[in-house]
Image 1 (cartoon, rainbow, N blue to C red):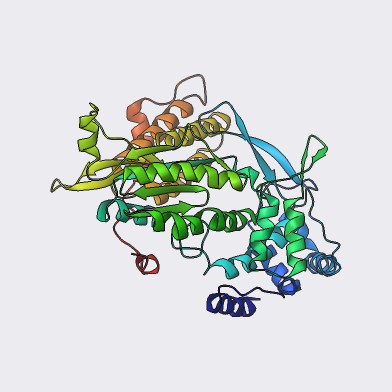
Image 2: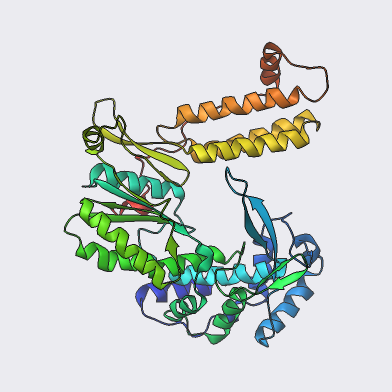
Length: 441
């Protein structure tokens, strides 16, 4: 499959308008077996309760039977199992879909095909779930635009109800590049697959498959046509000043030189999204002065501090370098920190009586993952404070393993010497642009 995908990538790059007529045959036994092996282990199961391990016990027979159904067009995905998880810092819950393992295999195969076709189509402003691109790359580019280009205003946008993606528009967008009716039929069935909740099946008339492997690339395709191309081909050309967009999945920030053009964009964005069955959360969307003149503007308005905005888990604020020059700085979003601490507290509360090695190993791994993302330029103090809060939680809940408190702070420090937690250090330099993305500038 890899060789054929490379050929498709070459064709897609050489002819941006080319439509691919023969793709479904790539979902053969070898390719789907590979997709099975690439899927993670020990994941929650769909409505049939089949685990990856169970499916793999008769892998050859299962894959062969799956390929037969795909070829005969009788394959239909199973409705996803819906469950609910708490929202960040809220009593509300958000729905999550759990896909059946066999459907994950097919979605994985289709995702590879779509990524190959669209990898060269997606614009430089798009960073979400793209090969060789990451959240940190999006943050670096945004930092460059604000510090080095003429940016004075930021439009911080929150798309409300991205689950409302219009199926008809989605299929029309896909048809611009894909003319293979068999593949389009399978994707359409995933979109319409529905979900099960409390033993009852519900239809899905809009949105991408909940929790599906295929959902990120479908969302990227949708926003590529709805947002990215529109911004680059129309919005920017109508601006007299500079304008930039940085998007990661459905999270994006737009930068403008002039306030009037930022305001005009905000109004036209609402109309643009409405056309494609999307809308912005106006209470979470704002236009703020941000850049080298933001502090001066804030003082004129009688404010001691300039406005901030959140993007990809970081609060961005205006600061100064050691030489007194303007700089964008970032710190961990308070909302994200509180959510992580709450999650850690709940885990400790339930598992405080487990073997101490298991508890400390869990927190070592958790902190390493946290550091890999949040240990970025200017954020070391906030991450160090987060580690201290984790230590406080450990002290509190390990002391509740029995009625007699086992730790004083002095004893707890000795305990941490024996079971040390990793210390944070900067992992990502915001000014270190990788070669893969530096050409954008």
